[in-house]
Image 1 (tube, rainbow, N blue to C red):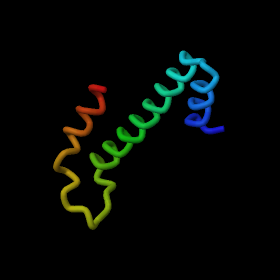
Image 2: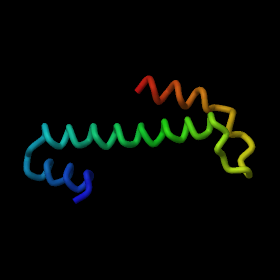
Image 3: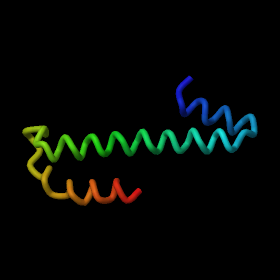
Image 4: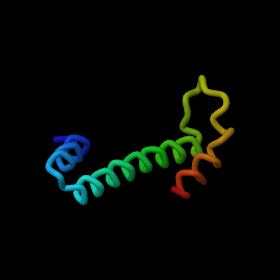
Length: 67
């Protein structure tokens, strides 16, 4: 089962504490993905077709770290 499926099953079973914990794990995984994207952008490992990568990477990193 995926984490999302486990979260739904926990809610269905009435185990809100477990469901909330799993929801937090999902949020943390999403934040980790966002931070990896920011790091990749900062290192210059970008799509050559993309020209506006620099604009906003600092703001994205700051927002992700504030969460």
